[in-house]
Structures are given as structure tokens and as C-alpha cells.
Amino acid sequence: MRALIQRVKTSWVVVNDKEVARIGMGLNVLLGIGKGDTEEIAQKMAHKILHMRIFEDDGGKMNLSVLDVKGEILVVPQFTLYANTKRGRRPSFEDAEEPSRARELFQYFTQILSQHAPVKAGVFGADMDVFILNWGPVTFLVEI
Image 1 (cartoon, one colour):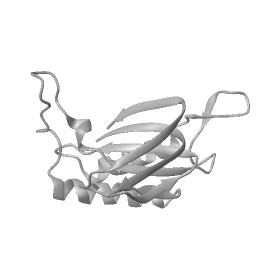
Image 2: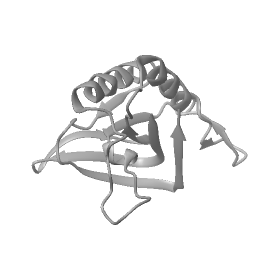
Image 3: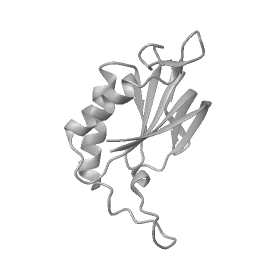
Image 4: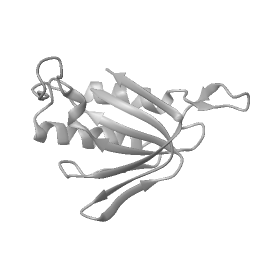
């Protein structure tokens, strides 16, 4: 499982010219699900993201988690995080999980997060316009 995590001032998703999800301050999570990922991996990823200290404390150090700052989380399914670009010019997506299983794990991951913080989600399988106002900018690639 791979997640591209961005600390944001706001983020939202539009599908077919209609806004489907929006958050204020918090995290934008682009989530890629690979072949062989499991519920256990999804749990580990969710807890890692919830507790990553990437928000600044009063001293200006990244010491606070999204939970500490009472932030929101927007999760967007992003199978292209599993693109293999080592050969040629056309990416291969053979390492991405099959859509039906990926959808299950995406929903499971989002459910775990929502037990701890306000969570919104993009639409699995849809063409989405994702608007991200990255704060910092602060961006991390997390793999489990």
C-alpha cells in the first residue's frame, strides 16, 4: 500500500462538474493499493497516517498529528501510485490491485480513519478533479 500524504489548508474533489467531497485543514491522502495488500496492511497505514507528526507545534517543529490539530482527512483512490515507469514511455499498472479488491480495501481503510477523525472520500473508479491547497508545501510518500 502506498499513500502520498499532503498537509493541506483545504482540498476537494469534483466528479462530473459536481463537488463530491471537501475538507478544511488536514490531510489529503492519495491512496494506491497494490497486489497482495490486506486489511492488516490497511490498518497499519491508517494508524501511521493518523499519528504522523507533520503539523507544527507552537515552536515551529513538526510535532503534531492530524488528530492533535483536529484536522480532517480527504482520501482519494489513486491506482497510478503503482505505475511502473522503469521501462519505456508507457507506465505499466500490473502491480496495482484488481479493482474489486482495491475498492474493498479502500473502503476499509477509509472506515478505519473515520473512527478517529472526520473523513471524506473521492469516488472509486471515477474520473476526478482533485483540488489541493498544499500547506508548506508538505508532502510524504508512505509505503507499507
